[in-house]
Length: 562
Image (tube, rainbow, N blue to C red):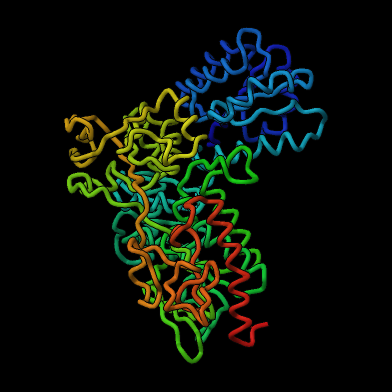
C-alpha cells in the first residue's frame, strides 16, 4: 500500500493559485495544501498533525490578510515545530519587508526569505526549496525506502547505538519488531543462512547482502565499508588519516585530489562529533544551514570521487615508524596499514558525567552526544541537555522539535562565554527551551529507563529532583591519544602539540616543525585533537586542507614520490 505523502502547505491570500501552479513540480512526492489566511493555516495544520500527517514545509506569503508573515510563521511553528518554514515576497515588497523579516532568520523563526519565482524555471528558488526538503527528509521524515532494516524489541542501548550509526552514515533505515511481517521474514532468512536463530538486534542490508546479529555498532560499520584486511598484502599508501570528522574529511578530499593514495580510518561513523549536529548554521556556503550528517556525507562522496578510501568502524590501536624506510605502520582492530605519512584527525570525546547512577542508564534515556535518532523518542517528554557549547545548543534546538520541554543545564552563570551568539538568540526565542545556570546533576534513576535527575544548585547547595525522560550529555572535550608512541608530544590534557608548541629538544637544526607537524617527522595533527585548535567545524576543515601541502612536501623530501 502506498504511503501517505507529506504536505507542503501554501499560505497566501490572493496568490494561492499562483503558488499551487509554481509548486506543481512537487506533486508526485508531496501533497500541496492551500490555506487562505494565517488562521486557516494554523487550523488546517493542527488537523493534519492530529491525524498523523507529516508537514514538511510551510510556504507563507509575506502579505497575509489576517496577520503579518512573522505572526503567521510563529503560530505555525508552535503547531508543527518540525516543518521547515519559508516566507516569500512579491518583488514589490521584497526589499520593503526585508528589514523586518531577515532578523527573524537569525533567531531561527524561519529558515529562508525568498523572492517569489519570476519565471517558469526559477531554479535558484527551487534549489532553496529542494535543500529545505532534503534536510527535512534527512533529519525528520521516516524513510520511504529502507536501506538498512533492524529487527529489535525496543530501545535497548545496542539497538539505539546501531540506529544512530546508520543514521549518521546517511542510510535510510527502519525498525521492525520480531513479530512483524518484515521482522519474521528477516529472522527466518537469518535462521536459514546461519543455521541458528539470530540474537536481537538483527541487522539486514539487502543491497550489501548483509544479515548479521552484531555485538556492537562498530561491527555494523565494518560491514558497511571497506576494511584493512581487504587491502592486497604489502600495500603502502601515501597518506593515512586517522579520524573522519571535518578535519579528516577535508584532508581526504585534498589529499586524494592532489594525487596522493589516501585512506581514512574511522572508529565510529564518518563525520565525527560534527556528524551528530542536527543543523550547522554558520558554515560557509550554506546560508540555510546544513546538518552535520549531510555535510559529512557530501565530503565523504567528494573524497571517494577523488579516489580516497574509508575504513569505518575501525579503531586505530597503535602507531610506529621504521627508522630505515620511514614507513608508518598503523595497527587497528581490523589489521595493519602502511603509509608514508600519517595525519591524526581523531578529534575528541565527550567528558563523562561521573555519576554512577546516571552512567548505569547510558543508552536508556541517557546519551553522550546529541543522538539524533533518539530525539524522535522524546515526544511529549522533558529533556535535559547538559553542556554550554555549540553542540549542546544545536542538540537542544533539535530536541525542541519533539520534546515538550528542553532544559539546558550549565555550571556557569550563562551561555555567552561558550556558545555562539546565533545559537543563544535561537534558544532565547524558542518557547520550549529554558536555560538553568549554576546547576550540576548529582544523581538520577528510573526503572530501566531514566525517569528523574537530582540537580544541585551551585550557588546555595540545595538539591532538587526533576522529572526527565531524556538526558543528553555534551560536556566538553576529552582526548584519546594514549595509544600513540611517546615520541608524539602532548600537553597535560593529551592534546597533540604541533609547530612551535613542540618542545625545543624535538626541533631540527634549531627550527620548529611546520605549523601542523608533530614532534614525530611524517606525522601531522589537525582538528580538535591538536592543541590550540579552535574547536569549530570551519577551522577543522581549514586545517585538514592546509595539512596536505605539508604532507606533499614531506613525501617529496623523503622518497621518490612524484
